[in-house]
Image (cartoon, rainbow, N blue to C red; front, side, top):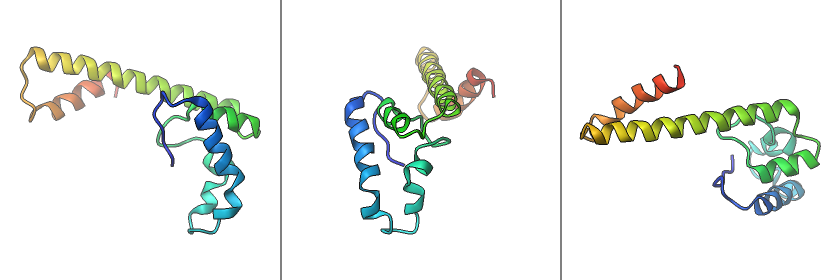
Length: 118
């Protein structure tokens, strides 16, 4: 998996994915896992992170990106937003309680689970 920051320029991401796809025949036999790098395999969910809008634009152009992929991606983005909100709230609570850093990890896991309904 190749990752970029969410605020990466969509045109740069689009061009990078397009270049990876166009040059795939040059590296397809580099390692045993390279068949998984075919755009039809690597350009669809699930993945460890949501897909970047620049990548999605290229995947749509290639006919790889489908409505169910977008639904998955939207769900993952919403999940990340919820985790970020929970993190901020947990951090604020911990600061207010003057919580020691050694107890924060356990506190965070509980706060996260509560916030996400786990």
